[in-house]
Amino acid sequence: MQPLDTPRFQPARSVLAWLLALGLGLAGGAALAGEAAPKNEVTKAEHFLKKLEDKARRMRGQAFKPGYEEKQALERIKALKEKYPDDTAVEALFQRTRAALMESKGDSIEITPDMLAYRQNENKLREIFAAEAEAQQRDYLAMVRSSGRLLDKAFPPPAIDQESPATLKDRYVILEGFEYPTNEFTEGGQQYLYVGSLTQGFYWVSLGGQPWIGPYEAVKRYRRLVNRDVPEGGKWTVVGRITGVRLLVPQAEKKKTLSPQWGWVVEPEAIIVPGLTFAVIDKTTELGGVFAGEERLEQLKSSLYTLKEVAADASPEAVVLAYATALKEKNFTLAKSLVWPNYLAGPRAMDRFEYHWDWHQHRFRTFYVHVTADEAKVEVQKGYDADNAVEDFFLTDEQKAKVAAISEEKVEQATVWSKAWDERGRQYGSPKPHFLRRVGGPKGRWYILNYEQPY
Image 1: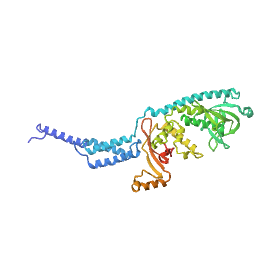
Image 2: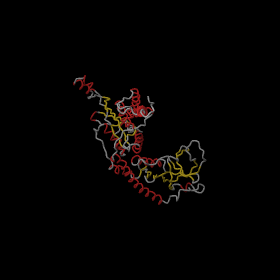
Image 3: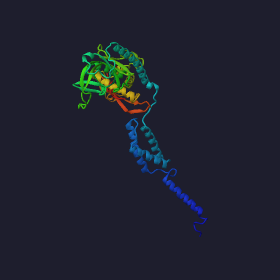
Image 4: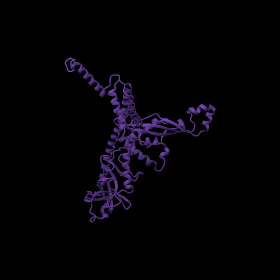
């Protein structure tokens, strides 16, 4: 008998080695065609996949980053798909994973130019009112200069030991670098804002009373109704009149670490927000101040509104979307008309509404650009519900008529879920509930209750 290493037996040994290598390769890579994955591995992978699917359902279209358990699903099912490509159970897990992974990236829609038109319109308004502000502040400053009472320059301030307060009383001064509320401070129960420094000298701009509140509230109305991008804390210019001199500590903290400083007290009269708006005191109006172009505000804005009123029989979904449109287009009047009237009737109600209006403006400017709404769910809270199929089953027509006659006025509440979308078309945050009320059935109209709710 010949040894195995003789030429006669060498081919057989090569075939054996090849088969052995193939077997080892299959053990570490793909399985044989048609081979099924072990059930326990499929079960474990599905366990983690359900975690991913559950999170996607909870997020309701909001994008999220998979955590440890969700990553386990991806890794396990990837390994099973690579090793058992022909297993139908593995293929089913693979398709479910693909769908859940896409859900984790967030819902999306196509953002059209029409959806962004409100931002273009705001830019147009900004340009219109900026031109108006430029013209009015030019006329105002010309009047101040022609009065003969304007200080030639604000800094350095007139020397306290050389100038008499009586001599400087009612002299105008133009103060650039006015930073509110950054440089605000309180002393002796009065609010001031300092302009200047230890090396330059100081002016104390008085923030108490109508001379400041009138123009400042006008600037706030400009920001609320025309242009959200007014820098709070930016450098403005204030024009005012000198009313006296005081020794104050220009520091906001209760514990003062700076030494007292002499400065001229200034009563403000006008605010210039460079490149944006100009506001001036107006003692003839109830508001106490006016911003440039405010008297023509609605005239200038109305041509840019895509929606000016809402039909009395509008559905709850239509009202929710109309409110979003009013916020986007800064249609303050329309927005108020869609809110439950009782919620705007209290002594501080409008302050609260304006506060939330400002936040809505910020959100539509910063976070999202478009809103969609799901179908409303309507429930009868009071009165006879003619559409209640369960009760109708038990009552005769005569009984239904009697119940309708003796019931109090019908009050309904609707719940509408909205989704907000950012500039890329991705869903922003999670869906939000909006609650509406209607009194009197079809003869009434729907009003929003939780108007402060973000979209």
